[in-house]
Amino acid sequence: MRFIPVAFGLMATTSVMANPVNVQSVTVQLANDQSGANANVDIPADGNPRSVQALWGKTSVSTNGVVSASSAQLNKFQQTTHCQITQHPNVNAELDAQRTWTQLDHGKVVQLNQASIVCKD
Image (tube, rainbow, N blue to C red; front, side, top):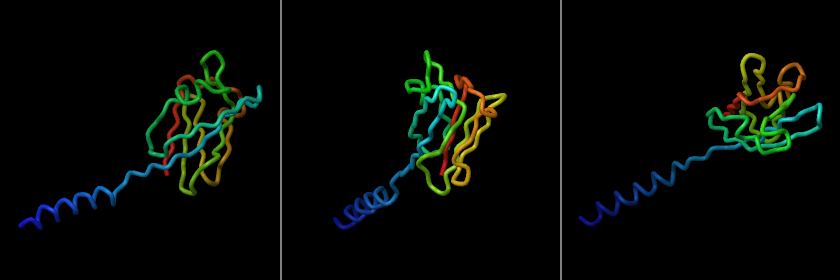
């Protein structure tokens, strides 16, 4: 009878260990091609939207607390990675293994205070 509780305990431990949560991260660079400033940020590739302002707000692409950039580049990624930066009405930039660099708004420097980024593998 002691075997049953031990067996259940081992099964529970094994099932927890066999299913670890492994969220990959990707590295995205924002650049202000006018000033030359750029900054890389690691972003979890979990499909959740994140504030560009929160991620890059304390980097060299931020001036007086406002993130400004003209392009984005995917620097560390998987072949299945897809990232999208959006800010209505003019920014809808997509990055993936085939498109690792993009302009945000036809090369114009854009203040990204309302922008979000979503990355997933």
